[in-house]
Length: 322
Image (cartoon, rainbow, N blue to C red; front, side, top):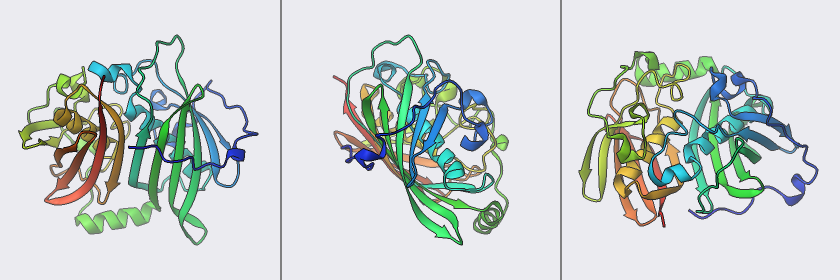
């Protein structure tokens, strides 16, 4: 997954203000209930839909820091994506004027990481810098209804990679009507899920995890060139369901794709990125089935189906750890 060229003009950040890592932003602006799940610490609007963001990466975290094998020596790709999600969400509210009660729907999400050098040990929490260029993809009656975010990540002046997020925004009342129309009923909330998901969970070590609660797949079966499984997330997971959800989020599906890729390619690989497309909501009250196949040495194709219909397709970049 090659890193695209910079989307930010060189002069866009020459007079950039210094950002702070001392305290987190308002948790409501990044859609979190728990302050401990907020990593974004500062934000600056450089005008022209160009922004800077700062995030402190937690030195320990029960989910983002739970890794075994080679993954423990690299920055967690899911943590970087969560920081990008928080920054894009913050920009939507503070920069684009998207109402807090709007429904957010991610349609495409990519991450391309650079470098393969393990991170050196550190005494203080790491500080992530993010540069964002935003395109207002759809504006209706002066209200932003869709946007694309191109986010460039760096750590201590060293480029980490680029993340692209495309999202749609709908007023709460409109979103509820559309959801009920497609489902023919009100969607259940995540609290209705069982505390222990049904099925046989994948062993944590098989997906480079230590804690069983962070396993997102069950009933895995090996098939020619890959694996099949079912998404299985406990209702009490403190990160995935920090607050009630009425569907499996993009972050949950990305984690499930990461684990499916590791089951297919082996835990000795390093994750180099993701290319994702989300076409439908993954509902909570019907099984979401996962199929992963390694088409070539550096990519695993992952597809999610529900009731026989594709809800998401992803490509997970992998590289053999030297």
